[in-house]
Every structure is written in structure tokens, then in C-alpha cells.
Picture: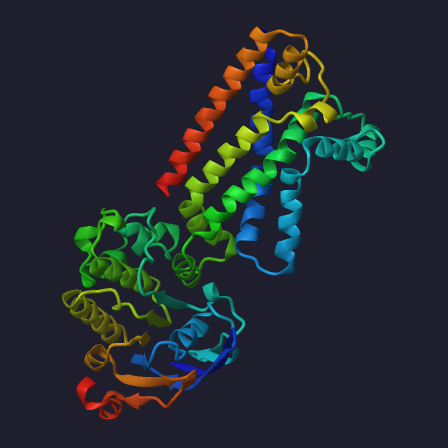
Length: 221
Length: 216
């Protein structure tokens, strides 16, 4: 469960968002520069904000990012190039668990469809494989909330579908609270449970996907 | 031609690089992530030995570490004298190598993608762990290139060394100083030998630094 009431000020631009979200996938939607990513960064603690961010009953505004228990999946280029796939997946785990001998690690790699890639260098992976590794790395830490900043943006259609399926399965099987920033209305309709629209730095109300889809112009809906 | 100046120069360059490695990298980290007044001030102080005439740097070192100096007088009470010793040559070389190290390492550190540091932070890394586990492995070739260039600068140091460490044969006569002495007394053969050694070493350094930078 997350409860947010934050204001982010960055270089003459102010973003304000107030919403609550429980288990399931919430999609933040809106045009570029409307404040979606800044709000997501504020939740993770990567951009300073004022207000309150309550993660499972604990206010984390002012808490350093590494102590918040959130996990972050960025748009692209966020695998550690000096580690192999397994090293990336287990990066956030204690040293003794950074091995396939850990049953949870092995299970997770199977679940996300990367078990056959574990010894590969990350530079040799396709875009879709990279993002699945980034998703596995985020899930490995068993985060209290999963934050995804346009993880599909740089992918082709087939890779989008596959990553979306893995994401949906991960959220459902864990009862996870997840927030996804997206530009793609098809993707949002396929994956999200609810939608938070943004416009010019202001977040609206959380809506069901059906309610939100009804507001879209015909050609995009 | 004696082997001592060659050995001394290599030792002085090695020790002075080792001396500035940790503070130099720390300063580069500080500068790579900072804007505003603190950055301008630290940047200017770091750059100063690079732009000052080496003789001015040498004179400043005498003022600080000489027997009447702030640090020198305290050290002399402990029975330690730095001026006109090989240790002075190490300090002089370290002071001029520091800005080369900092200004070469800084862009390598600044080029570490924020996507990687963001992920590292959310995966539970505090600032120190973030440096060791994300920043250093990514920026390492650039930092190594910076250390190599700092070594080269230390190896070639002349003016500040001459003032602060002097030209004492068998003690503080580094290769550049010995080259100057040989030239002064008209010993062209010896002078040319030092020119050849220093040029060859510098060439190796430039090639190594370029290879390391390309690997990035």
C-alpha cells in the first residue's frame, strides 16, 4: 500500500501528485514533461520532494533511497556492464545469496525466462533480455514497491509483449504494489489495473482502466 | 651516466602518485557530483599547481615545509627535516601531479550513467557502497589513465623539485635535474641519454593512457 502527497520542484517546474494505491499495477500516463517520471523518482527518493510518501504505513520522505525498500526499473541501459547476468540479478542481495545455489534466485530466473542467460555478458543481450534481467534484479530484492520508468520504451513489439507478460505474472503472484510510467495506451490497457493521468505537472484522480480509456480520443482508444 | 637518477625518478614518481591517489580520486568524486560555489573554490585550488610556475610552487613548499614554515617547524621539533631530501622531491612531484590526476579522473567519474547509480541506490547501496560497487568498476579505466598521467607528470617534475629538494648528487638529483646539470656542464652525451629515457617513458605512458581511455 502506498499513499502519496508530494510536490517536486525542479528548475521552474512544479509537480504535484496525491494518490493511494494498493496491490496491483498502477500506470502513470500523460504527455512528455507532465511530471510522471519526477513523481516516480520522488517516491524512490531519487529526486527531493516535499510532502508525504507512506510505504506500507511508513513515511519515507527524507529517507535515503537505499533505505526505502523500493526497486527501480529504468527505461534502458541500466545493467551493470562489468557483471554477467547472474551478477546483475543478484546485485542487491547479501553476498551469500549471490549464487544460483539460492533456490529463490534460481526460481526467479526461471520465472522471468532468463535461466539460460545467466553466464552471458550483458552487452551480448538483446533489448528485451536486458529489460527482463533488470526486472529480475528488481524483484530479487523482494521490494515493498516496484517502480518502473517506461521499461518498454526501447523495445520492439514482441519483446514488449513478453516483458509485459512477465511483469503481470510477477505482480499477480506476489500481490505486489507496482507503479509503471508509460506513454503507450495499448500497453496500459493490456497491463494496468488502474491509471493515474498527469497533465502539466498535476496528477489527476486514480481511475479504472475502463474509465480512463473512455476519455481517450477515438483514434488512440 | 649513473643509474641513481633513473632509480630515484621512478621511485619519486611512484611514491608521489601513490601519495595523491586516494585524496586525488576523492577530490575528483567531489567535483564530479558538485555544482555551485564549493565546486568553483575546490576546482581553483586543485588547478593552482597546474597553472602556477613550478618555481612558485617550489617556493610555496619551502614556505610551508621549510624549517621556519608552518608544517616544517613542527616537523623539525620531531627531528624530521624535509627540505633538500628525497622526501621533498616526492612532495614536490605529488603537488604537481595532483591536478593532473583530479582533472583527468573527474570526467571519467562524471560519465558514470545516472541510470546505474539510481539503480544502485534503490538496491540498497549507501554512498560508500555505491562508490565501490558501481562508480569505481565503471570509471576504473579512466581513473587508471588518470593515475598513469599523474605518474608521467611526477616523473617530469623539475622546477618545484629543484627549489624544494635541491640538486644534491646521490640524493635529490632526479632525471630532469640531472639532464639540466649535464647540459650546463656541456655533457651532451649524458643529456641526450636522459632525453631518450624520459621521452621513451613518456611515450609509453601516453600509449597506455590512450589504450585505457579507449576501453571505456
